[in-house]
Amino acid sequence: MTPFAALHHRPGHPLLLPNAWDHATAAALAAAGHAAIGTTSLGVAAAAGLPDGAAATRAETVRLARRLGGGGFLFSVDAESGFSDDPDEVAALAVELARAGAVGINLEDGRADGTLAPLAVHAAKVAAVKAAVPELFVNARTDTYWHGQDDPEPETLRRLDAYRQAGADGVFAPGLTEPAAIGRLVGAVGVPLNILWTPTGPGLAELAALGVARVSLGSLLYRSALAAAVATAAAVAAGEPVGPVPGYAEVQALNGR
Image (tube, rainbow, N blue to C red; front, side, top):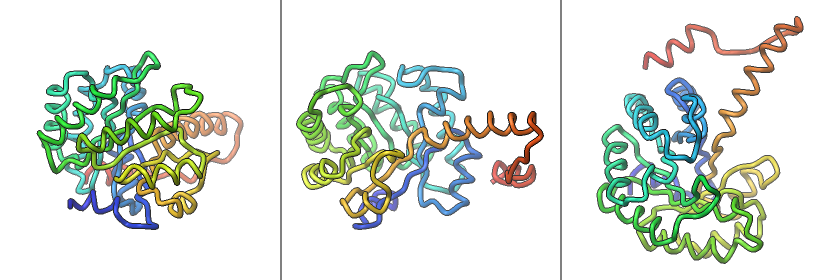
């Protein structure tokens, strides 16, 4: 078991995975003591002026992985749906990310048009990645809870079980916030379950008690940073106090690692 995989097998102590969008953010989070860092596809796309979830940021995603690879910390890459429906192309991407230093990849079955990829297509991607890079931790995500189904639980379990059978090391059901349903999924999936933290959902302690293995922050930090930037400019304009913020030298030190 790799060190990153081991972080998913600590009963009662889920991996809190904050998601970065550039090197400085990842380095700052690692310096603050986080055991591993994820990337956020929304943050990477928005920072480049591109849409998220539209297979438009393959180059930016690989470029960021290469930058993070020299940081000395564990990181996993949010690769949307793999930027292709061809399993061989997705596997080639996984090889590139692993060579850059990534220890994990997140692959989602949601599509830009609001539909879900056929189960067999996404399962084939998972299988191709595991065949090409066995040591890469594959977190297979289903977007069933984000696509307006009246009762997403049965389809969620069906998809996550198929992804597990295809070789996924962990599974992810963003949008699921109901504690009882989370507990049922933990007991049924057979591999570490990842839940997206939301302000209206269970806190970290409750998710730990439910048996969740990994808690992601998704695009929360990026969106919070945008809000902070706008709020800081407004405070200066209004003559209000600002801070605290990292100093110039502190940020330079992060980027010089």
